[in-house]
Image (cartoon, rainbow, N blue to C red):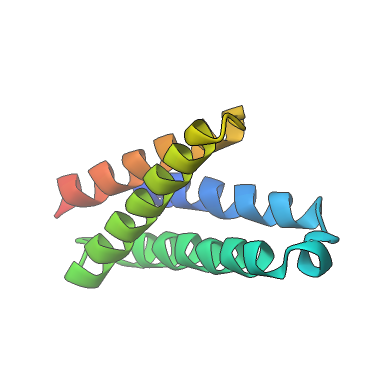
Length: 107
């Protein structure tokens, strides 16, 4: 059975993939935002892959989980500051916190 971190990371990856698939115009209108989202999706996917393959998380996996959690916390703060919050922003922060906690717990 996949770990909790793997499940959370897969959900995070899918969230970003759906976000970008629903907004193809983003790559023309705001390419920096689109590329940033795609890069963040790659981090989620890397975390999902590493947590699925490693029985005991390695230091790079912990670092990736920490980076994903920090990025989602920053994203939540920016959205809260600009009052453009949606459930999706909270879900990303929660999923990344779950993934990080599980990676640290299994270490």
